[in-house]
Length: 120
Image 1 (spheres, one colour):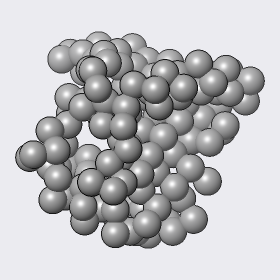
Image 2 (cartoon, rainbow, N blue to C red):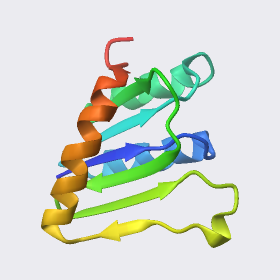
Image 3 (cartoon, rainbow, N blue to C red):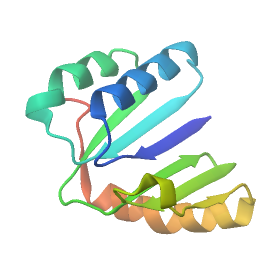
């Protein structure tokens, strides 16, 4: 099972802590975090996360304006960045073909627009 997570402007330490705890308690899960977070600020946390072995961290070369969560081909959540979280509209699907379609469009773009921080 794998998750592909894209977070950009949310409370970073809390997200990283949650992802670390989830990865630690679910060793069969592989997490890929793609973001434009400042590695000067959060590099120590990222280094500690890599020790778990089932987390890959990727750094975007330019910012994107959405949040995406993919759970294999089982589920996806996509939402635009918004300061108004009470009125946020998102796409959530558990329909296999829809998830595969969005994943096949977005993941190559994110892969091409980011660099791995696995060895940094």
